[in-house]
Amino acid sequence: MQRKTARISVLIDAGKKAALAATCEIQETTPSQVVRSLITEFLVAHGANLPGYPKRKLDKRGSAKPA
Image 1 (tube, helix red, strand yellow):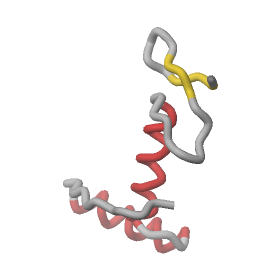
Image 2 (spheres, one colour):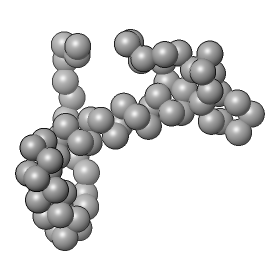
Image 3 (cartoon, rainbow, N blue to C red):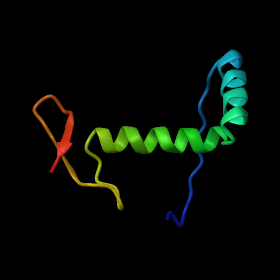
């Protein structure tokens, strides 16, 4: 689990923000949890080695594949 946190600001249009908030409420989650999950998925998919996730190597096109 993370010990330190950092803030990131993202600008999105008001309609998307409202839709995200409404969908998160239905799914019983928060926008922050969704964004953290998407960032983690993106990093793992693109070869970032994160603790607790399988290490991956990038192929010639930059796509991650299992190590």
